[in-house]
Image (tube, rainbow, N blue to C red; front, side):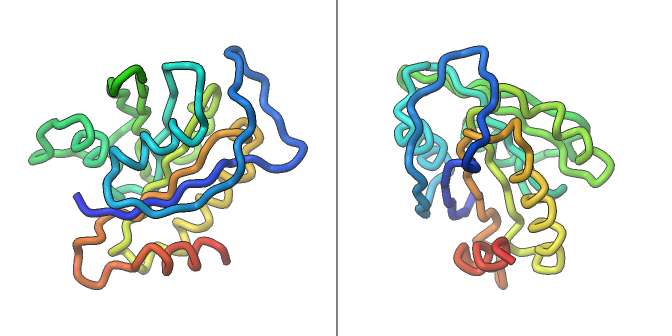
Length: 182
């Protein structure tokens, strides 16, 4: 598993979402790149300095970006046979005092309209990009921008996961970041 990560909070000025659980204090925006997926997810937790020990992480991205593979690898599970996710999978990962509930949601075009059903109570959003699929970068950017407009995700942290860095010709994380800004 080869990837690069960037993280920043998803908070637009003036937008707040109702929460059933108490929210940690606001944190300042930060972007950074890391070499390991487990480290990236745990960095979100540490940067937020959450008092709660359970977090809901929503993992989304276009189909075939590697979302399920990432979740299975983080959890130390077999990745030799993976089928496209139709709907969603939930994995709970325990680390020290934290419990991460990772919601891996399918990315096929027909499923994307259902993503909004998973936004409530999301603490962190992991947007997975297939760095080797240059032809779909515009579609990837458009879908990410649609997510960033969602009021129910305001206050959540965003982690952009530049996946498949080990493939020849894959875009580098800074190229993906530039492509996502347009």
